[in-house]
Amino acid sequence: MNRILVFFALFLIFSFLTTCSSKKKSEPGQNTVAILRDSVIKLDSLSSILLFKDNSLALKYANTAVKLSGEIGSDEFLARSMNVKGIVLSVNEYDSAFACFNDALSLSGNAGTESEKAHIFYNLSQLYYLANDYKNTVTLLDSSIQRGLKYRNYKAVTSSLIALGNVYYVTDEYTNAKTMYDSALRISSRNSLNKEMAVVLANLAKFTEDPIESKSILTKAISLLSKEKGTEEEQVTTEINLGLLQENPDSAILYYLRAIGKATKYNLQIELLGACNNIAYKYLKKKDIEQADHYIADKAIPIALELKNDDWLSTLYDTYSDILIAKKEFQKAIIYLRKSIEARTASDKLISEKQVRLLNAILELKNKSLLIAEKDGMIIQKDARINQMYLWLAISGILILVAGGGIFWIRQLAKIKLQRTKLEAAKKIIEAEENEKERNAMELHDAVGALISKLNETISRSMVQDHSSKQAIGLHMTEFKDEIRNISHRMNKHILERHPIDSLLKSLFDDTIRYSKLHLTYLVDKPLKTLKVDVAIHIYRIVQELINNARKHARDSEVKLSIHFFEESLELVYSDNGNGFSLGSESKKGMGISNIFARVNLINGHAELDSEPGRGVYWKITAPTG
Image 1 (cartoon, rainbow, N blue to C red):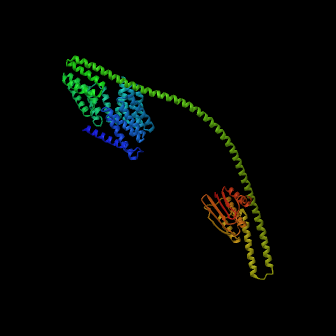
Image 2: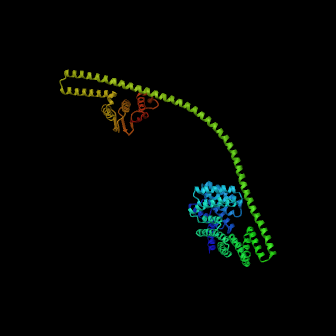
Image 3: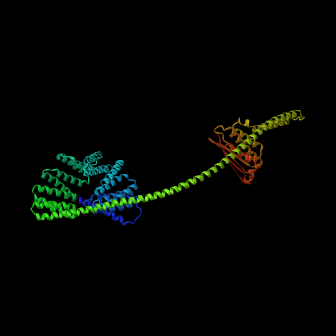
């Protein structure tokens, strides 16, 4: 039933792959990528299942998984598939497996999947273990443990600790070996890794001299393995180990029969060979030569011949020669002893060839690394020379920049100094103007006051008898006096400072409308906060200058003026539809325009002037209010 399910799953996967290959090659969409990823995962799982059962089919699936991972375009998936392919190749082709693991390691570095590196380091370590290079084995296992702990890949950590224990065990460092097994047991137990826990227990059983305790440990291991899928191989191996612990042949045979049953059921041929070989010796011990002959001659040797496994054939031929000796067929026993020696020689030769190829692959990698290191050294030297050249160029560039910057800085200082001098000069000129206006205002006020008094006295003494005419003349004289007083007040800076800017401007605009031919429309906001005195005076004088210019040049044209106050600034916009002028000439000649720009600069403002002959004048002035 299980075989039918496996073949059905394989049929579905091959159907899917056939369908995929018939489509046109294009960039895979999101759904296609998801399907491809699922297929890669299934193929990798099948490769692991068929690792020993059918290695050639497992390799076929692994190659397909690698191809599909390449179509996905994911280094992470490709690294995993290359790692699985390396595991499959490590059964028969050590050198190819070594190359696969190194490719997987490089890809996992590109993909940034540090957790996957823990598995790859472990698999590489097993190849170095086969090459008897225990130093590099321990280094790689240590790297696997460090990566696994950092990224919480406890399965890889436990497997690496067990492998370290095995290295210490074969090098007779039993204390260190047991320490590694104990650590692996703690981690696997804490993280509920039943399979790894069972493998650790099976190894710890080797350190127990009491057969009953060893049996208990191995029984617990089988119980743990039965909870996990895909652990049939480990279960059979543990059953065989339990059989080895039995002194009573019948008890041992029971365990071997259970192992043979499971190995047959799950098609675990290598484990089946081991169980058959061990049970044959127990039957020999019981003098049951017929059963011993059956398990070796009828079951084990045909399977080993089919697998072309010289290692097991050597062992089985040797066992069968013992059976033949028990049957007193000495001549035939000698033939099988020779066959055993020939098979062992062939097996050792094959293993040696594998190891030589593996060592060559390792040496080739080291040579490549040395060549790369040598080239890297040459590149580093070349880069150092280039960097030195760049350094001198940079120093020269910096010196040029410093010199240029110095010249620019000196020029900027000179420009700033000139601007500051201009501002100071403008400030002094404007202050002088304000002082002159103040003096003139006082003189005008005094002179006009005296003059008005004399005129009033003269009118009162005049011969004009018409009372209404006298009254009208008196009113005009009063208006004249008030207007002259307003003019003198507007000329006096100290009087202006005592009034808010909006009321001053409104008075100015109203008088302009009353006494000039200008069609003035204005809009002045109430300031959001009290303006700085200098700002208020300069704005007032700028407005005066604009209106004076309009009276001179715009005459009876339309004039629009607005002042808007904001939280930290103000905006003055002026326009008229008078004669206008050319900016290239009049703007340089007119003192009024220069005065406006000077006052704007003094309050850190910005002025924009736009005018053309016949198209009027436009001003936009912005300034801070603080």
